[in-house]
Amino acid sequence: MNTPIIETRNLHKWYSGVHALKGVSLKVERGQALGLVGDNGAGKSTLINILSGLHHQDDGEVLVEGAQTNIRNPKDAMGLGIETIYQYNSMVPLMTISRNVFIGREPLKWSIGGFGILDENKMREDSVKAIADVDLHLRSPDALVGELSGGQRQGVAIARAMHFKSKVMILDEPTNHLSVKETAKVIGFVKGLKAQGVTSIFISHNMHHVFACCDRIVAMALGQIVLDKPVSETSIEEVSEKL
Amino acid sequence: MRRLFKLSLQKPELAGALLLVLLVIVFQVRSDYVFLSVNNIRGILGLLPETALVALGVTLLMICGEFDLSVGSVFALMPMTMAVLVVGGWPFWLAVGAGLTLCAFVGFVNGWITIRFDIPSFITTLGMMFMARSMTVVISGGFPPRIRPGEVPNWMFAGFVDDGNLIRASVLWFIGIAVLISLLLSKTNFGNWVRATGGFMPAAAAMGIPTGKVKIACFMICSVLAGFAGMIQSLRLNSFLPSIGEGMELQAVAAAVIGGTALAGGVGSIVGGLIGATLIRVIDNGMVMSQVDANWFKFAIGALTIFAVVGNAWLRRRGRAMKVETDK
Image 1 (tube, rainbow over the protein chains, first blue to last red):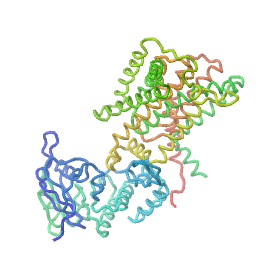
Image 2 (cartoon, each protein chain N blue to C red; image 1 turned 90 degrees about the horizontal axis):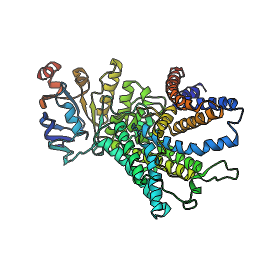
Image 3 (spheres, chains in turn purple, green; image 1 turned 90 degrees about the vertical axis):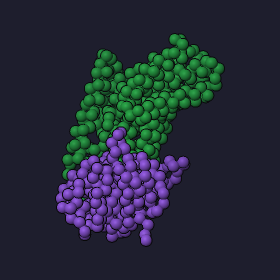
Image 4 (cartoon, helix red, strand yellow; image 1 turned 135 degrees about the horizontal axis):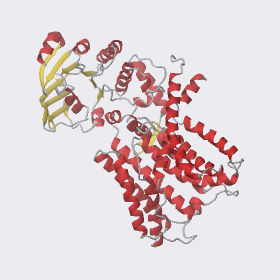
């Protein structure tokens, strides 16, 4: 039997008196596209914030590829190959595409103690290549991210995650506030991930988006998992009922 | 060509640069052509590095999304500390080191309190402004320390370096530091983190940048530069007064803003800060040379600050609206 790429065991989290996660245990298989749905406050964001290193669980364990982990910050999560794409939060609008692709992981010509001179040519070339790899075509790596459309931004964020060879990509409401056309594009990106063998966790409260690109649905309500089925064995109606 | 024009319209320091050129021309004519004389330029160049160094640090910090009102007080605290130590028998360089270390510590406290307690740096540094000023007066003991001429190497910081007595060492110090900070911001990964932190902090944090540490580092650089500038001024005047640098904090902010730095962070450049600081000095001096009542100085700075921000926003909008081919 395959080891799950991510496994959580009995995760608990309290936010100033609110019990946001009540013992969540979840196994995510390698290469799976998992859709995580639930109403606001159901605990989806809490769960993925723990996986991406923004918060730390109060109780329970997170295993990555079968090994115990202690994810303390986003850097740790990225080091384990877990990359998170947020609705807004993953790009700096006033910086260029190539700089955004390498935020926090800049290639350096030389460095002392982690600080050094940027290798700007490499940043430019690699970001062009990374963006082309997700089938996105932008005119220049020197354009500001703020000038891109919402869908293009998500494309760049996904390209960034692919460039750094993430094993698991968490997409937190990536289709919020996008037009229909742009949403289709983002769903296309997510389907592309599966083709490349990347595991993805797609969070959304729009069922149609989740059903369009995932092969397993996990629904959460009040801090617990209330439904966990392959997409072929459930329907939007059944999931909606559980929430 | 058109694209180049569009790009330059969007440069945040453009309004300031245009204004600087315009004002120099106006003052040159209004002052009966003595504004650009060697004697007058010598006067401007004496003061400029001191203001500009403070503005430089404040610009860096503002790009990082924070703010420092304590620079004027640190400007006085550093030379006073150094002078008191020298009078107390410390070797000059050791006293300089101690003074700059104290500045770094002040910057660290500013940053640490702001980050740790998640309060606006406006408040933290406002408090520090009073505290550092008070400390300066206390350690001076109410009497400015007297350092005999020749006891400290004034020439290394404030002496003239050319035969024509035009350029002081402080100008060279300033150019060196400005180039260094500018490279730090544009060519290093640290600079990338500063812009990301000031540009959109949630993204920077999510990408694993230690935003708190980056901000604290900027606070420290800002304080050290302000202290260093204060030392240069004190050595130039060869007097150590607890009152120097009053009002400087707001001039430095004005310089940064005039140079196109956004109060909200993320936008700005060191060149912009330099242009802003130069504008302030040019106005100060130009008004005197054109025999305008000097009490109008603050009015001019205030009006200029508002005008530059409005002008920048307008130019940027025009630049963005300009149609150019967007395909490859």
